[in-house]
Amino acid sequence: MNIDAEAKLKQLLSVAGLPVRPSYRRQEVCLILGIDKRTFWRMTAHHEPTADGQRHPATLDSYMTIGHRRVRYHELVDYLRRNRSWQRQNAVDPRQLGFF
Image 1: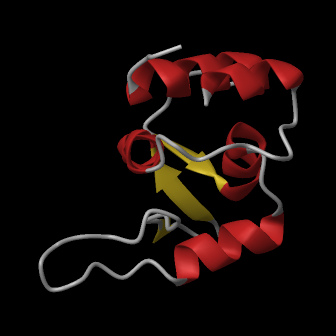
Image 2 (image 1 turned 60 degrees about the vertical axis):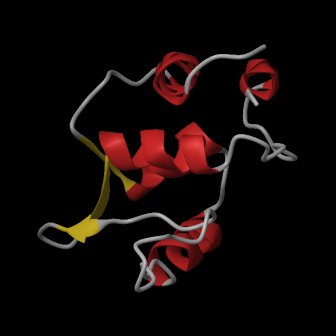
């Protein structure tokens, strides 16, 4: 199955029962990606672009609102693009496995 990252994200959103929005809260990102809260914090805390603009594939750029950390839709698309070969080991829903 060879689909682009944005189509993959839209399918993951559909499986999670979430609409396409400009950004998502921590709980929603965890549901979309099938990760736990601790992994989310690790991914956002270690997001540091290098001098040449490259980013570690397993990190997420995020921003803070009033007490909530959010991840933009386009950052999730970029994350999926950077992690094309990433294999999901703990999918929330078995249908998610086919997207990777």
